[in-house]
Image (spheres, rainbow, N blue to C red):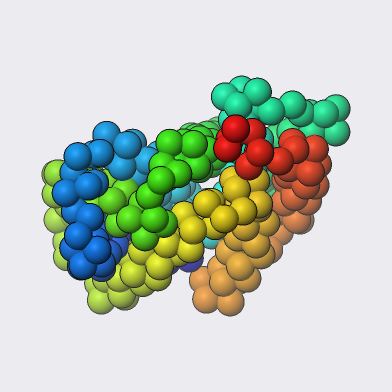
Length: 273
């Protein structure tokens, strides 16, 4: 919802650059207090790669998506993250998928196809944002597995602060280059402030903690809740219409994700071997 408000004025790249910068500024004092700044500098390739895969690139892609799709539709596409996590685990970690899991993947992507062809809409105009959303979801899945596998020895708050610092550092020059000519409104600045503090710094601290405690499969299952709130907030605050296409496509995605994640096995076990 906040991206839907702020993206038209900031632009996708500048918005996420500011969002990550705010997140990094909030978290940096914690990193300094823990005396771990030199640690993340020495290990910068890991933190940079994790930051790009889990925040900088997917955030920017989803920001671009909100220029064309409603908050509800965007959140439904975000719900495909557990499916991509299962695919990543199957390919990278050799985690098996049962026939139910394969059927779930097919059903989930049928749901995505339904969302990409709305009633009375121009499906051609929606191909790019839908593909961008799917790439972002795939990166979330990959980034979660990468962090779980390669950053086990770090505290969750260290991972959060380190990834945000390098992600912000990477994206800042692009954000300045694409900075909008007109100064964004107060409402957009407030939106990006909330995005940076609560939807990034605070939420990622919980996210990386959960990755270490309960594993990838259980952590990314939070994507089940994103469409519920995305559609609700879009309906209440942005006057977005809940269409039959959203309900049908969303049902396909939800059932597909449920089948895929329930049959994919315990990703945690495979990763920690």
